[in-house]
Image (cartoon, rainbow, N blue to C red; front, side, top):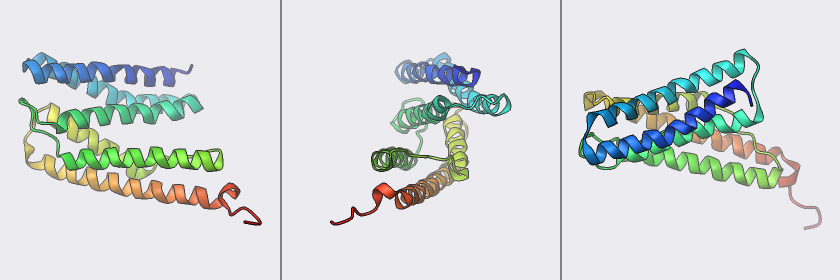
Length: 192
C-alpha cells in the first residue's frame, strides 16, 4: 500500500461525509453543514492533485492506484453533481444537462471498458487532456455552487465543462474502438 494509494483511499472516505453534510444542509439550512461539505469537497479535490504528484515524484504508480484514483474522482464528482442538480432550498442548482452528460459519459466508459475487457482480456483507459480539463471545470462548478457565488458566469463554466466532458467521451469512444480493432480476439472466426 503506497502513500499515494492511502491518500486516494482517504479521498474516497471523504465522499460519504460530503454527502451527509450536503443532505444535512438541505434539511436544516445550518451554514456549518455547508462549510463542512465545502471543506470535504475542497480537500478531496486538492488531494486529487497531491496523490498524483506523490505517485509520480516518488515512483509509487501502481495498478491499484490506476483504478482507485479515477474511481475517487468519479464518485466525488458524480455525487456532488447529482446532489447539487436537484432542487435545493438553499442553493442555486447545477444545470441538469451537465449532470446528465457527465453521468452518461461515465456509464459509457464503464460499459465500453467492460466490453473491451470481455473481448480482448484487457481494457486500457488512458487519461486524456480533455478529461482532465473537464474534471477541473466540473470541480469549479461544484465549488461555485458551494460557495454560493454569483450565478452569471457559472452557466458559462458549466457549458464549457459539458463541452469538454462530451469531447473526452468521444475521445474515449475512439480509443475503445481502436483497442477493439487491433485485438485479434475481435477478428472474425475462421470458417464462419
